[in-house]
Length: 179
Image (cartoon, rainbow, N blue to C red; front, side):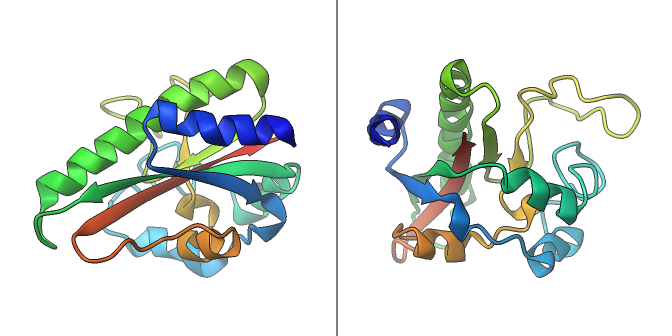
């Protein structure tokens, strides 16, 4: 798909450090990855519309993902002063989320039914309305790849994308599934 190569090249303009085509046939949704959300450190399980269990049962996620044939993997790679450089991690995460949402808006113009799967929980709202009220932005909400049960390192490997960039780095990965 020639259009996919244009999208991959355009990812750099949005601020991503890496981008590559994604073969949706390589996506596996694993219950053990989804289960990590329950005990994960982000603390959003059961507190955010984009996170489990609100983002849907794994079977529903699998059915949704199966309707896509191609996509793009994107990454933001940050440099850290040391392994405890929280400020560096947050800076790279912020750059990634901003680029991810901006590119998602651009992609929706051509692919209105694309599925964006990001890094970490949705942060569109300062405080999520879950469970007291419907999502304020259901058309822009972004679940994480892990919320869908995707082992990010495995998906990167299957699609020829580095996952680890060495000591003193951190990589945030997301994907857009396209029809």
